[in-house]
Image 1 (cartoon, one colour):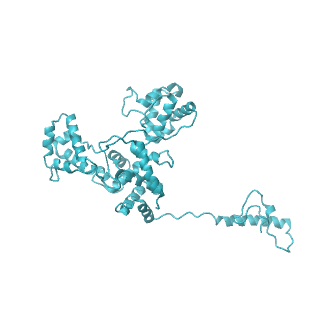
Image 2 (cartoon, rainbow, N blue to C red):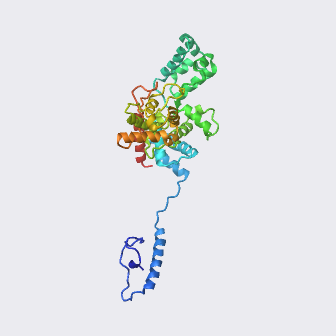
Image 3 (spheres, rainbow, N blue to C red):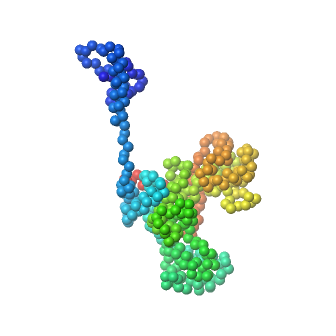
Length: 402
């Protein structure tokens, strides 16, 4: 029974009948006494609430690992060989890192992988023999080693039976070049002198992740896939490359919400570079000084009495307004490599001054303006170009039927 007069007119408790519907009255029956109406109203409310509970949306059941891997494989481009293998390694990486394997995270990793290597585990690099030789001779010249001595050393046989010269002639990938450098360092006195136990191959694998980052990450969080020969070698595998690349892209608390493009920029320029570039923009507005928005807020490793970098020097001009000393400014700037920087007095005060002087809210994330430098790059490229290219791939992945 529906009793309109017993319920507030502005509240609908009905699952099927519109609010305020007329009460249902059977023809030929006398109206019930008020007491009966009141009891009936209470019972009706309880019945409606009970009935509506059954109409609540049901949460979908969690996907099984097999279903997740299949969904990931469906988003890997069709031209890629062993899509199931790529999906299995990516799922293993996300699981080990405790990162939700949702569409956004999956597509972000796949977009970086496609941009960096087009899904090749150890992608070839154009003109790599020339690049490798130039690096060796550059180091030799810097250390005063005659070029003739270097040429003679390269004629010696390496551990695989071929001369170093022959191996350099045919090197195609960074993984191969890294192994040549390792053998040079381990086998030749000249190699130790030239490279000083320092392998100049800094990035590698399907996501072109930093070897130094991978090594540091493995120290902080044990590598979950057994004991590899070395973390450096693991970077050049599909499993390790995806694991460390995913950790670098998604394994830190960035303040960008669902704007993944800023993570893509950070992947290229360094963690929090987009947030830091936005801070530099605020400093520029507050001081009316032009500042390079590169995301670097202080000079790494500089002594306390050394001249400050561009951004720090500009911030110091605000010292009186900020009510902060140079030492306090430097202390907060040194936190810009982590999430804590957003909670510093310096961060809050600079944005407050800039927005007051600029007369409008300022963005908290800006893609850094960095020109990319590498022997592998043969044309002018920027972090903005990289982030936008990856974001285009990311959007296509999200739109694909996964």
